[in-house]
Image 1: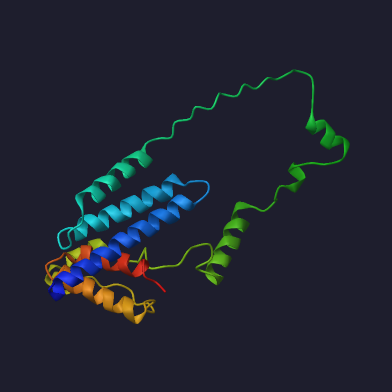
Image 2: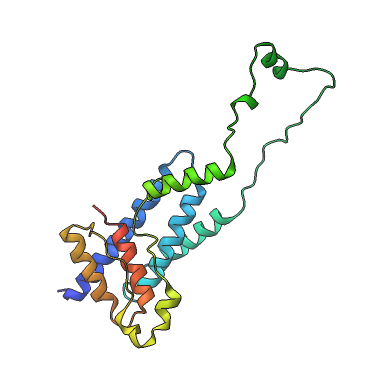
Length: 205
């Protein structure tokens, strides 16, 4: 009969592989295919798999496949499309003349706002709605690693992160606690924070 520790290892391993499959399916179903999204998924999952491979047995062929896909999507795109040739003819006018005939002008549609007025408008919007235009999550927490690393006496205490309303269900909280117990107290504070952050962001309800 498997011990509780072995069962926990298998549960965490199954969760990691299911999450890996789910992320790749979502990335590959996007149309058109986004190489940058696939590169991000590979980079994120490679870091997580390599970090947890010391505690959970991750099949080496999965890590190798991730590395191969990561290297492929990082290569510069190669286009086989023929080069277009633009032919110009002196003395003839096309659509600009037609627009003039009908009293249309693109330049009349340009904004006359000054740089200073634009800066003030943007600043007012950001003051009123700080989160406007951004996907708000905990992926980029406001941490100063240099300052945190300078407190050597407090290194064993971990990393202080900003408080936020917990987005996890009770099952998610139990899984996070299991991850912390499995990782162990010898794990560097920075790595522990990144692992917990990845777990939370992939299990938000």
